[in-house]
Image (cartoon, rainbow, N blue to C red; front, side, top):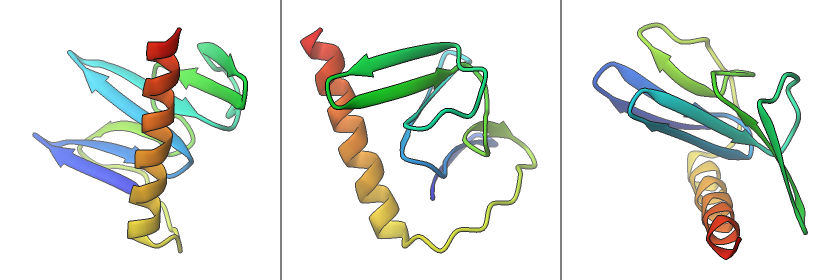
Length: 95
């Protein structure tokens, strides 16, 4: 699980994927379908489901947040997030 805190806002990622929050706009990209995706981006090696709001305990939360229990090691989760983010940025730049 990855969480980043700032100004009473929390970016939370509990699945493989990424969370982006700029100028009040949230984008959550997950490697699994939680239903109701705003956009689906398909690549050679997989598919990313894009959401414009918080979904499946992932996203941007203000104030109180849903409780998520995870047994994933924090270092492993951070490394997973970093590698997936690098792949997504590389794929987007390559388009």
